[in-house]
Amino acid sequence: MPDPNPYSTPVSDPSANPSVEADLEAIASGQKLIIFGILCYFGIILTRLVFPPLGLIALLAAVVLGILGTLRLVNGFGYALHIRILLLIALFIPLIGLITLLILNGKATTILRAGGYTVGILGASRS
View (tube, rainbow, N blue to C red):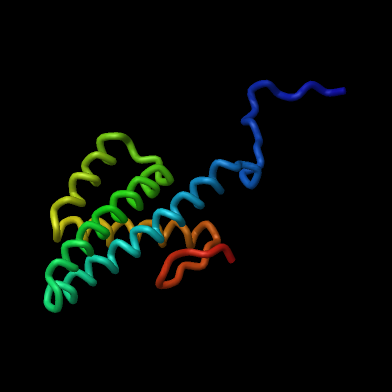
């Protein structure tokens, strides 16, 4: 029986890695929260014209959904702690927060489509 070469490159099955699937699930759920946060940001524009106190509630909902979605996304992306903190701080600046959510949504869409998910207007679903 021949001995295997101890200096050869180890071979592994990439489809057997459950952490990749878990990361895609975290990204998908974070993206849905971010999309709802973006919709709340646009809802602020409409509600501020009709009933201003309702605009404050929509702003609070947008920030909370943005924070929760960003936390799930950066965990799925595996970002370093200092990047996570910068992204969370950016969410508290009104226009910068919206742009940050849009950029994170675009990156999540790209990763999820590469992972075999179907991405629609309200988030991703497994094909």
